[in-house]
Length: 64
Image 1 (cartoon, rainbow, N blue to C red):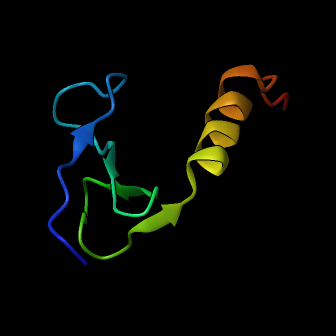
Image 2 (image 1 turned 120 degrees about the horizontal axis):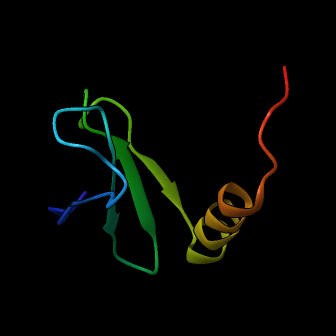
């Protein structure tokens, strides 16, 4: 995998575990978590990533 330039989520407070995003080659988006950034890297197509963001932004909160 080529070297990726990671960006931390703007919703992440300092010092907490955060989501990091990087644009890859061939139109891919990579996601990882700052607690262990090299252990698990999720790769998605841009359309899939857009759907994920849309779902997270518009999902009703869980009631419990």
